[in-house]
Image 1 (tube, rainbow, N blue to C red):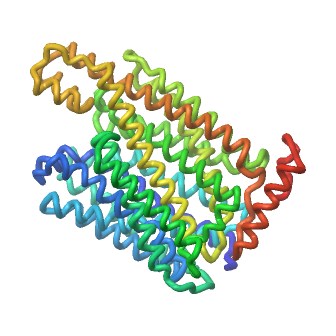
Image 2 (image 1 turned 135 degrees about the vertical axis):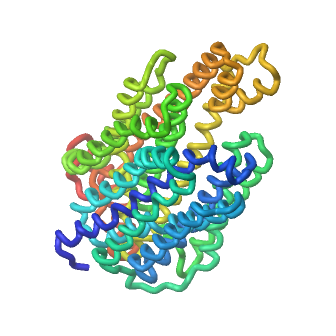
Image 3 (image 1 turned 90 degrees about the vertical axis):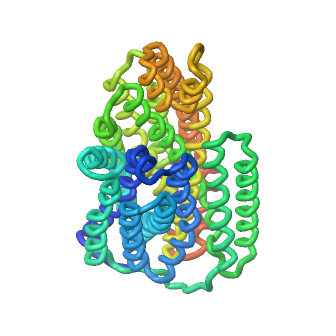
Length: 527
């Protein structure tokens, strides 16, 4: 596909609203939960399913959605997915019951599943190796920008309108995205038309959905929960069956030869590690700002802006760092900065306020801005053009599992550390149980009992739990820095334009590079 440089960047501009709406939607549900619980008379289990239904549909449809884009046209699928996402948002806003809301969340997840991999797949076809990192950084930054915009807009709308309005935020953004994509994005599809890998589609969807369900259940009910362990084991077995089938299939859904490429394999692994650490930040900081520091939902969103500012600066620097030092050094530096920010956050004290939190969030954002688009570019640059969307779907699916795993693990760590420090001595049994359920319940119990001692204990216990979670993330970021420096290729892989031969060639080139060249002089070695 030959497009002028100006047309290509206008196409990226058309994709930005589509990426932005995903980030906005990721944060608005949490704001509306208290009102949803009352108005829809939702049980605790149903509230959990408000989140889980979306994640399960998202995980199940990610890889098949990318395949459909490659086969029938990435622009067509993106337009259809955005339309489904918009309809799902409207269905959420006007859901008359908790069950209807859960169904609407499934529709929303199905629409979202194909949006990001299809966008990335289109970018890989449109851009050269030199321009691709900037285009990917623009899309990833737009997604992250939606995270604080959601609480800012949603917090204001919840104070002015009814709860459904926070889901209608998506609709005008979707309309803008639909118009931009329809006018500015060129159509692209695979030149090959392989047969549908029906067993592969079924096994990938079932494996990812079951594994994700087990992780969600473990995060909610603990790692000893029998159903959680069963679901994780079943999901792992079904995923293994999927991999075995793909090795034998004549027209596989996923070309496993991709993992012979160091760029794809380690880029995917490192981007998944980034997702894990991101959830430490996204999970802990909203609770810290609102429950410990007492900010409103709007104030919470405003205090997340340094994270986005750092992210934008990091993304702007990422391409230049990768070009001058090599992606392995750029990603390693990003992880080092991220580890520093997380470690700083992990030393939060009871007397610290918003200023210190916003400082370490800015540092974390800077590290994320360098690491995330560079790891994504390393993975996605190895994809053949005819499989760009399904390959991107695979990367996004693994990142989604990594994020879900991060939420489950870090949530469990935070909860355990919180309970270890919480002092409920002398409290009525009902109040003690509410306080043990989490920081929100603890603050509510302290306010109801007018107990300054309980409030102080709840705050101190949560800060301790947050510190533990952030320090674990910092340790993982250090592992990511070392892994990137040692194992990520010293040059971005040239975009593969067809087949496993090119991937195999990249694999051998990387091995020869390691054998023949050492030290910093390898930065210009051909891949």
